[in-house]
Amino acid sequence: MRGLWKNAWRRDGWPARLAWLLGLWAAGVGGLAVVAYVLRLVMKSLGMTAGAA
Image 1: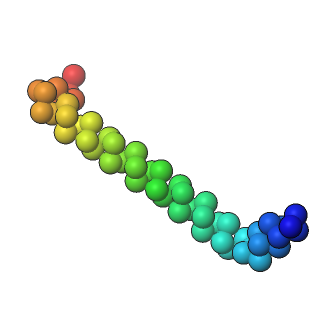
Image 2: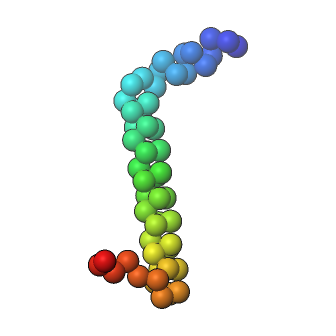
C-alpha cells in the first residue's frame, strides 16, 4: 500500500505537476482579481475615490 502513492505520483510525471501548479496559481490570481474588483465597486458605491493627489 505504501508504494501505491509513489507509483501514482511517478506515473503523472512533471507535466501533470506543472499543470497543477499553473492551474492553482492562475486560480489564486483570478480570485484576488475578483476580490479587488468587488472591493473597488464597494468603495466606489460609498463615494470613496482614488483621485489624483
